[in-house]
Length: 102
Image (tube, rainbow, N blue to C red):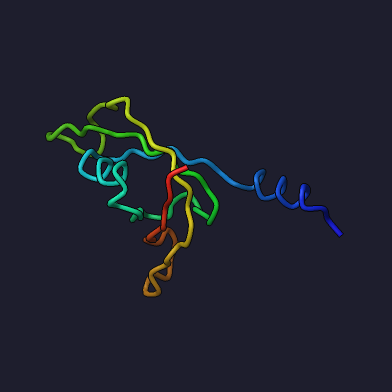
């Protein structure tokens, strides 16, 4: 039988930290606690317990996905429950992750 320390260490070792761009319109409500979820394409294999380092990204209106700059503001959150949309059959799928500040 494993000790509590071994179980916690295994859980900690399997947890991943993902760095994600987050537009200001979504970053601010997450920072002040109004937004407690992330809606994302699961192209990274997110799991409960993972950490998300949300990095505020100010997009360029000419090319919002590729051009822009980081503002320097960051927020670390932990993933709780993950909702998988049942109609998606092929990866990557869209998910909603419950998040809490770390």
